[in-house]
Length: 383
Image (tube, rainbow, N blue to C red; front, side, top):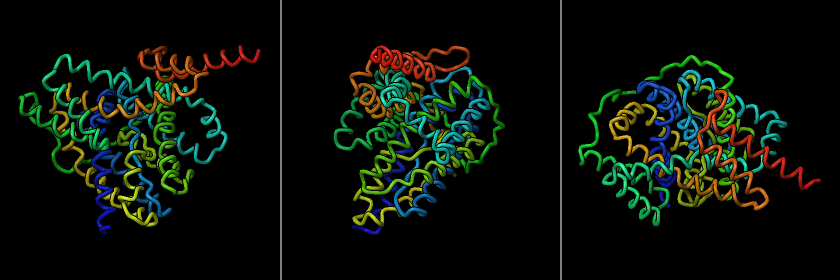
């Protein structure tokens, strides 16, 4: 095995993690009113803090602890309406603080653990379902652009599921320019600079976005990340991982970064034998991973400028296809327990509806509806 194996595994993980979901992160920042320069700052900030967290955790524990932005969390933010960027940042800070608190306050972790897996998975499915469905909505309006990409996605994933969305990103960009659908590139093409955001805290945003964002990050990122580590034969430093990602998320939020968690898909690349035949040396891939993300942080503005020039149908296709795997996993978890299927389906339906009541978004109401239905169902059985 070449000495470059950790570097190449980390490079593949970086391309998959960044290229496969960056369009969704851009869409999330746009949904809460961020300007193009603020979007570039938020991408740079999240790349920077995830690099620092991954490097420190990997070096500290000598295992490949790979970090990632919360993809499902980005979908949740992108589905949010009526919030300004500073209010969204306030919700990011609350979610990040809750992650840190979970590392040190055992009752809080126990409380989160008591939320039924089926309900949490159904909420996640309800968050990502509209984005996956949007791919086929866009196909009706721009079939020449979208349908070839859907076919490519289905074919490539047969051979390499990790690279399917990256292939779509590359091919879609080429097709958009070939068909004359892309606008001229404008914006920051040099080194990216951070823009500080003064957060504003609103109860509706904290309950409707901050709380679901915390739960989604814990369920879809951290729990999945711990599972990948266990499967690869590594210990799971839960407290350090939650503390590091939570603190990094808190710091990055002041520049607009969305919360971080442990990676799952990209972690499996760096924790597997392709990274190094000796599992005790695979942690080096975490350092390479951090280095690549520092480079991406420096040139985040250029990435955002290129994405901003692409047609909206293409961005929606990138985002939706990137969430197919997340939807599959969430639906599997939501419907696995037959006794909890009705509350789970109710949670999914309410969350996917996008309903907003009293300034609180649908993810919270979906969670509340599912828990209430499950509680009523259990009460009837008890009687």
